[in-house]
Image (cartoon, rainbow, N blue to C red; front, side, top):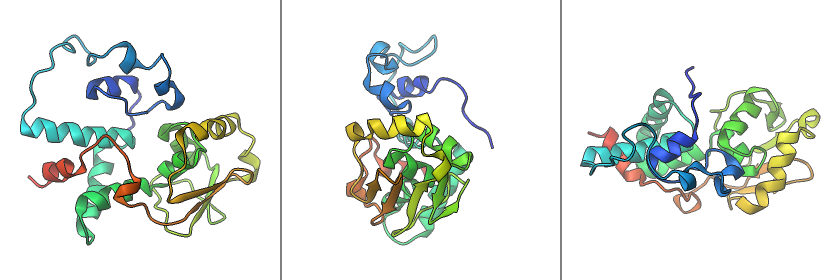
Length: 208
């Protein structure tokens, strides 16, 4: 599976806003968006007016980059959301939020979604007591997500947990910090998901 290996700060600069791809660094004076407000590249200063297609494309790119997905992965999740009953945009956001790597990040076990994905890939997380190494695994209401016993003293996990208070835990999750364990209280609704993205424009883009 392909993965993005260039500077993620360039992605924030391209969108012209913080996507919080580097954890606590995004809230520090070192944030690239604060230091350089232009898009990356030699033509970064020349931001022209976007067409309707361009506006929809930028919303899709933002959402895809926030969750750290490649186009093929993102398109597959959209098609799954499209097949389910309900509002496609809301379903898309719920499926993205219920990915294991995102839940690990939301619970504070990882400082960013990229770090959370690496923790899952290396086998440090369990769902309902079973080790899972698939970052795209979907959690359900009532599931428990916990750090394996032998991994709880890892510095990245302890550092992320120490900083989670500033970010907060979503209402649909419950964290037992002492046990490094989180519970899915309910599936997230649109009201629980606060992102700088218009998901309806993403649906319109794929529905062309």
